[in-house]
Amino acid sequence: MIPFLDLKQVNAVYREELVAAATRVIDSGWYIQGEEVKKFEQSFADYCGTKHCIGVANGLDALILVLRAWKVLGKLKDGDEVIVPANTYIASILAITENKLKPVLVEPDPHTFNICPANILSAISKNTKAILAVHLYGQLAAMPEIMAIASEHNLLVLEDSAQSHGATILGKKAGNWGHASGFSFYPGKNLGALGDAGAVTTSDDELAQTIRALGNYGSHKKYENLYQGVNSRLDELQAALLTVKLKHLDVEMQRRREVAIAYANEINNPLIRLPINKGVSLENLESHVFHLFVVRTKNRSALQQHLLDSGIQTVIHYPIPPHKQQAYKGLAELELKLTVDMHNEVLSLPISPVMTGEQVKVVVNACNSFKG
Ligand SMILES: *Cc1c(COP(=O)(O)O)cnc(C)c1O
Image 1 (cartoon, rainbow, N blue to C red):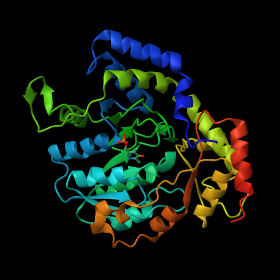
Image 2: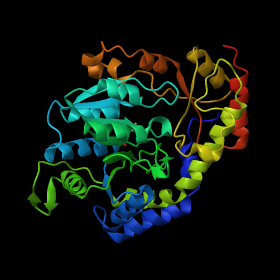
Image 3: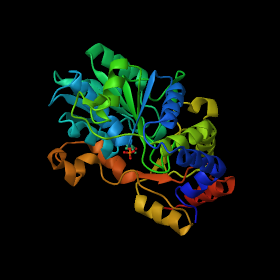
């Protein structure tokens, strides 16, 4: 069986380094808010090109805390509208509603799966205060266009970079385009911890300070509380493990791109729509880090079964769009045809830095022998 993602294998490559890092933390006697977190925050801020990185407990908290800090700083208030892609993972929407802000769902660009700048423009109202740009499946959203719209309409931009660590447009990385960005280091993400972890990146000093306080009981100073905060901190152990994984991220990213290029060049089946063009070179893929390789097909269940019969595990990202979830009954009536179609047609093929050339061939052959 070719697993969708073999995390055991992914981490086994760095076993010695990971064990050494964990041992260092265990032996230090210091487990929360210490040198390991500081070191990782500095390395990740440097990696993204931002002034600050604030470690938090997970990716959802990262997004929640940015919006919460903007409320504390008077930049957002209850009921303000936040434009967000309709086809995102539900966490993006939860971060908005958790803060009593109003999500305004807009349709994606059908080729990139990312939010469509033209649709952002038509969704802007007098209550619009922010854009939550999600870099879905590993590909940066159209950030130059989105930042231009934001600056013209005086909107805040929060990036959801949970799936796109290291993706770049014009030399500028995910996490460094908007006014702030949330990252997830959930184990299956491209930069994955060995448990839950997340971070915010920003170059705004005041925002960084506020988020740091909010995630630590609202405290700037020990036992002095400025805000009614929460406990959302990155711990020393995960930070130490992430420092190891970060060093290898760019090599893993290139391997993911090579797999994606092989899929794009070798899968030849009119029933399967590919996410990138054939013949694209590594140099032209800087904006995509292939967290997922998502194809589209009209007969998804047959393709998924056919691949399973060929020993290939696939996953659907995502089977139900947020506005059709029980949790968001109030949004169910929205007309979002493209989003609904996508959710019925998308299928994610296995992709990871530890996939072998042999495994890629098996997937290619199975896709090519699919008859519908
Ligand atoms: C994974 C993910 C999140 C949430 O991250 P967690 O660490 O699981 O809380 C948010 N947004 C997107 C797009 C994600 O893929």
